[in-house]
Length: 121
Image (cartoon, rainbow, N blue to C red):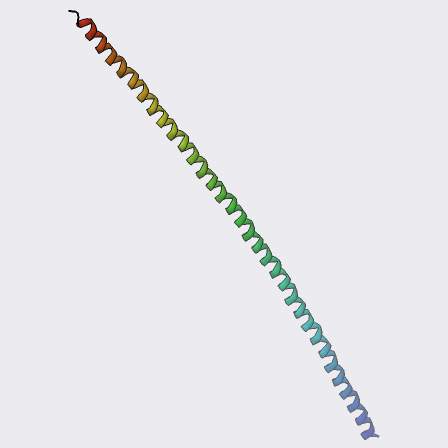
């Protein structure tokens, strides 16, 4: 009887060990799956962060292009204003030269006219 009872106790003990092993395996799987989920979730957060970083780089690149194009436009517009200013200076120089020629010709005319007046005497 004792041998039979001990074998029953041994079977219960062995089944208990198997149950613990099985239960621990289930807990391990649950723990491992939660680790995998955390890795997956962190990967998603990383991708979201990385994509937002790429978006910021892209957006800053667009702002840089807009700024750079604005600078090119200002350079073009300033060169256009410089050409207008330079042409205005050339025009003034030309106009002053014309006035100088008119003035010089009138002086020559006065000298010639005075010499005509002086000739009879």
